[in-house]
Image 1: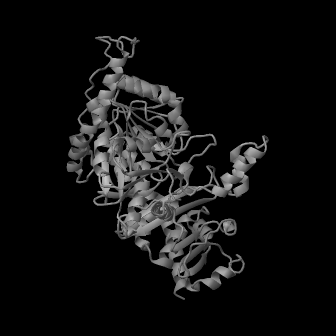
Image 2: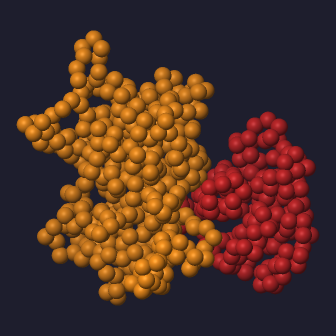
Image 3: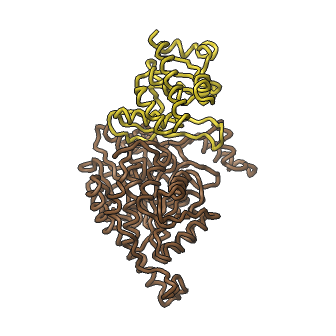
Length: 413
Length: 175
């Protein structure tokens, strides 16, 4: 039954219906509402069999999740931004140990300068930690993906990150059809670990592996992660059949016969879909729900007919360019399609239909370069660059740009 | 933000599609906050802030001249301001001259809230006022949304405040 609820609440309820056994939690905006809600459920008895642990840090949260998972429990946590970075070492451990932890990342920018608003810098910075990464396009997808994530993680013994745009989705109220407890129970069996620490039969996991076997262990981790490309669609179909919805690793919208396709992850794809409905030109939208493993075959197939591809990214790799674009380029190797990278929505800057419309007009006019920052206030950066070259005593960029713009507060959207 | 959330719940209860989301200026109590709500008859996919509102609700009239609140408002748009003062007192003669005056209402929402709930939180009174001014949601759904969110005396106090504000605004608009 559809309910009008907050995204964070929907995620918390979906996770609760997956019956997590251990939830170590540490608060950080904009993720906090999720673990607060799960904590309240654990306390009031509506989440039986769940140990909710308030830990001292995000490093502690992931370490506790690793311990719980290694002991054979279904473990879940959530974080964002600097919190994810503080977990970095433990993230690699969870993946390396093959522990099926599920975690929500309420996507938020990374400092400095400190910024609490949405972009994908946090999860993209951890794209190589060996976790499966799924991105939710809306809160319905966020709720559904968490249920699938537990099944996927446990099937493969690989941890899964479900990335949800902070504030834009986590704090948005919208109609959400939560899977019923019965539907979740039918889809998701109790956790049956491939390996777990048993005092009756002690083993070491995560012990030293030298050059004689490290490559093989890493190869097998990568093999196991890669399995998700086949296992996710199977699970998503089964889940979708149970709840009457469609969940796809890659979602094509009006891409058939489209000359231009916008590739996007997360909530911006809804805005892009609205825009292409209004356009006379043939423009489609390709939404990547699965980012790791990268769905090369699906992306190549979906973009086969496109002459121009615009990859819309909410983060970038300084000194290199678009993170997602690099993978899209690999998927399209040998194709003659023109690929442009557009960096948009950094640190909570709203990505509007008007800006995306202008972006497509620039593309038509040949004005869109290989990499563009959407809605960049060019005058502000050019003034600062001039100052940089004129004097050594410039102070921090953040101060100059804020002073010059006279903006009392930033915005999200 | 609570008002935008409750408005979206009321619209949902009326059988419509709705989306509400905040725009936090900075993370501290009392900081200026904007929140947005869209109501439609088809699923809402767009995620950008509302820049051309059909209605603007101002909870704190001291912010009126700090932020460009009415820039995107169409001449036939609605404005509801939490204030006991006149448009002239608020320095909004120019806005009044540009708009349909029967769609511009000031409502002493904090006073109504204090009377019915004991606390000067104008959210729910403004919702009642907005329902009367625009008809975008029914007062019945506003009441239901309040009872879903709050319990016991708090719920009933807020329902009474919303109803009182609805009646008062209805009286002004249809005078």
